[in-house]
Image (cartoon, rainbow, N blue to C red):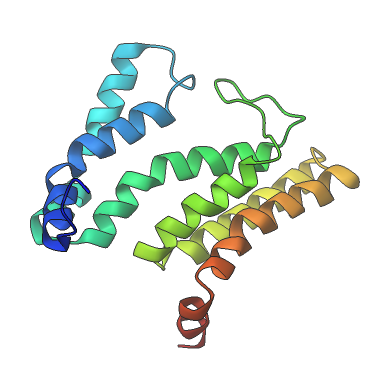
Amino acid sequence: GLLLGKVPWAIVALLLLAVPLAGLSAWWSLRGVIGSVSVRMWASIAYAVLPGMTAAIATGRIGTTAAVILAPPTARALIRTLAGPDRQLPGLAPCRTRTPWWTALLLAAVTSVMPVLWPVVFIVSLLAVIILAIRGSRRGRALLTTLGRLAIATLVPLLLLAPWSLLLILK
């Protein structure tokens, strides 16, 4: 491959490219949500140079760095998953059948580098579904479908990381 199988080179590449990758990740995730290109550019740059991101790079925290890079697309996918196919959110494509699975894959990647985020995402997603049910936005079959999509998006990462997840949950 490009890095000739050298793990230290991969770590250095990740840390050197972290700020541009975080900026591109935020830029892509804000696509359609923020109409103004200049505002989207400034938001992406501000996200990429957050103090937490620069501190993670300076101290060599690979997990935090990877999680910051993956957070915007994961949040965008999770919002699409919770919105469902029947609700069109401004700037976001409607939820397709594969959206919860894509969300699960992204959340598995984030969970593998920063496990503390999985319970946070699970609780926030569950609260969002409860709020949708209380507001009357989801009833009957639509609520069950949303819960099914949420289960795929949040429980599949635990299955993908099963041997490690079990040890993490037990401790």
